[in-house]
Image (cartoon, rainbow, N blue to C red):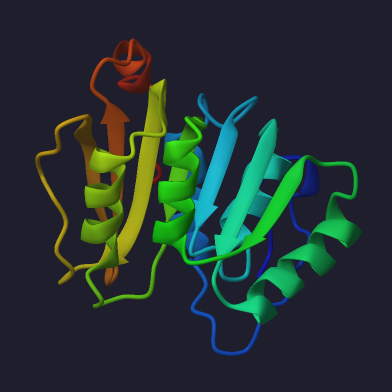
Length: 196
């Protein structure tokens, strides 16, 4: 896998065994659509796996990234790559269940500008993530939640604090972009070009 843009464009990153990485096409779509949001953002990468979404975000100038995965081999892999690729970057790596992490940061009132969720398919985890974010709202006032799921996975069209701004199909994957309802970023977001 190669980073698709930014300071580390073209750098190759291996994928741990048993991990389904986000495809290059879908990662490029994420960075194209959120190009105006990623630089300077505080990002939470849930179900981080190989960490590719985090490394794409750091390459494009994210201020800080927090990676969460419950599998120790994944977080160990992310730590190794981060040490080699971006040793001075602000990256926090947490070995924990993603729902538990959301609840913990919710109790601490920690906020993120951009939350990424690429869970295993067909386990209802996008729906569960968005439900947990309804209870523990850690999305900053001008923030976004980006979810990656299988075409047949369930996801909410309506949400109490988030508005579904983009739904785009890439093969068997859906890219979903939710925006915080009270955000003032909606006007600018309309002018971000969508990846072809």
